[in-house]
Image (cartoon, rainbow, N blue to C red; front, side, top):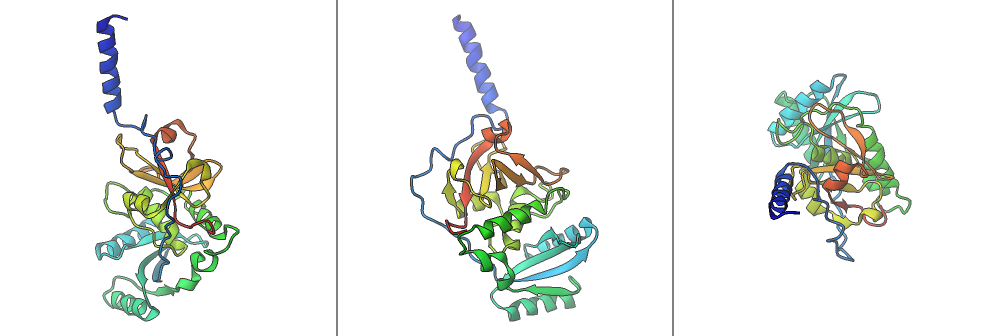
Length: 259
């Protein structure tokens, strides 16, 4: 190969390396220490539940209103098929009820229900050895499959973003997972890809750099559930997919060995 051809190939590699995408970004596993300190999430306190909507848009609008008040709300689809909204992490029932009554008087919400910490799966199953809490996390995630990707997070441009979905799944089970993917990545204990267990979170760099920008909840057998992009429905994908395999940045667990 002539010197000119070598130069052209080098330039081509530089250009390809600068394009957005995932190629060559996979890391995480190789950088993991042999033994990492175990981290666990705090259990969620009392939570306020409001709404029972047939239309998802109505739940989203209420969630946006609550978010504008700094209440970090999230929606989910109840077993009845209705969409409901939850928010808050109150240390006592009295505190949660006072806040709910205040919001009702202000016309922000109507009827409400207070969810006690003991009602969450995390309180019931966290120390069981059979992985019951992990099964509940996966079951909750599966309940979101097919729901249209709607805004409910930090930016109107991002839709019900991937980190919002992960946060919601964990909070619905009583675990106080942070809101954004970077914070979620920092909050958990590193886990090797071959050691992934259902309920762990898997992280990706989808913006063409080496920073975490996407997250999904691992369901087993190399698959995960995530909110792909605005306009798409929440779905299940495979870590073996070439795109996600190339984007893979690592995984985190929040439950410990007894989760």
